[in-house]
Length: 183
Image (cartoon, rainbow, N blue to C red; front, side, top):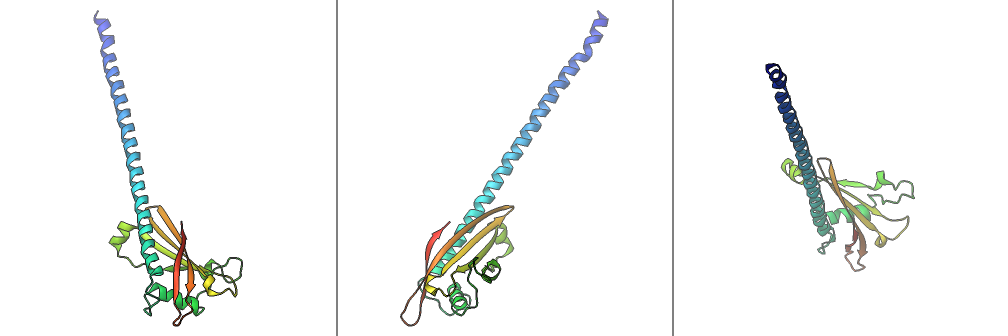
């Protein structure tokens, strides 16, 4: 009988160890699943923040471009910048079918000065702007394209808006930009 008891003493310990290993494996799986869920939630929140930042900044830029107050004369006014650059041939139009009118010559990136805490919250905002035309086409057929991009932690969102130009024939000449579409 004693010989039989000695053989059974180790089997209970092995059984308990197997149960502990199963519980540890389940706990590790739950930790990995919760980490994955948390990572996905953070990525989704960052992507939503990028979308909100890009759309919000695009609305501000759209208001500046389509504002009915006129070009003004201030150098920090986007409408004056567009008027001066396009009217005085300081900025090449974009037309990929013509030499000298590709992305390199026509695309401009606007400097968006933001403090670091705003960049951390809103993400990095970049505005690319160009105007489309054809050789010898009248200026009132000009199309302005803006692309607002917001990026943060490997997530990006872009908003592209196209504007058509209307030029008044009364003096003084007044340029009005009207939104065509947005994607």
